[in-house]
Image (tube, rainbow, N blue to C red):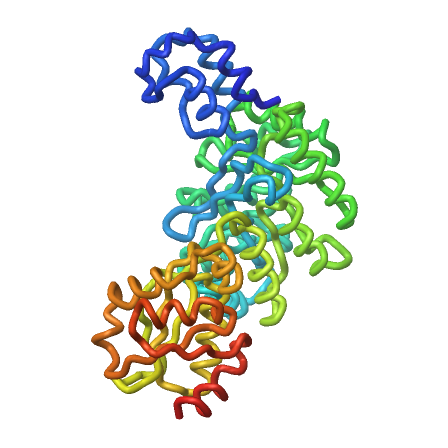
Length: 443
């Protein structure tokens, strides 16, 4: 079990020496418990206590990197069962399966699409993570040629999938220096798989159908010198995956079975309903998810789901405050105010761009709160509006002195007018009504 602040305080030297950078040992203990301080910074801890604190306070799930460079996939290091308790940190890698029986042309098309296709949603770029090259042919040379073809075209993280070490080694000749994930070692073949992982410095997937089996296998692999591990619970249905992945996460978080403190692998191509399995993997603890090539709508759905689950629920996605031109406005164009909650900003922007209305959009800093919430919390007020008008040069950007507030900001309109000296118009509550409002009132 993870130690609480009081438990940590009891085994600290209680000198209050401040040499750790904190005013008291209790403050230091609270920071250690929250993961914001390293026990090693206390100069008076003996080695046994330092190791005990380190083991009890480091993230219960090991951080594992697949691939190299800017597109590398980083998974693990999660600390909670439910995202509302804190947050989830490392989004799962969505890896697209490429069988080695495909033609070179088909491999080229799919690999290039994975590398180049990108979608933007609420200011964030969304894209698939990498490729999972599966040895369907059974031939080492065929597998090697497919890996080589992909290496010539793209620079993506890779999973190499085969039950045969000699096949994986053939693929590793082409990409072994780029940290591909090897899949998958079992109790019957783990020694040869560990030898490969050690030789090429690669992370390794282990496969077993129970928590106990996975714990035994990870322990054996660590003894063989492989520490970067990913666990495949070998589930055959989404229901079974849900049960096993939940048991694994709970055992890891509570540290009742430390040997399962590794990211979880989910191969959706083996399930009767791959779409349901992919969604479940994103929601329930899949760190690496292998999927068949996805059509456009499914791709967007899974990328959006991943984005939603792996944002901090206590920190809304925010836009940078500032004055944004929309549709090439002039000095006579309307000036609208909105908040820096990304969803609000992009909703308003979408309607304005769609209507092709030139205007200036002043985004004010409400700490990521929506308009209604910001007004209720006092974050959106007349002082903020006045300071934002000056800070971002709105007075120089337009020749008039009229601004449009969001409909839900009507309660502050009078005070804004008094403090700024600008004429204030209250716009509609629904952004969809903005184009008609601007045409009627300011057109």
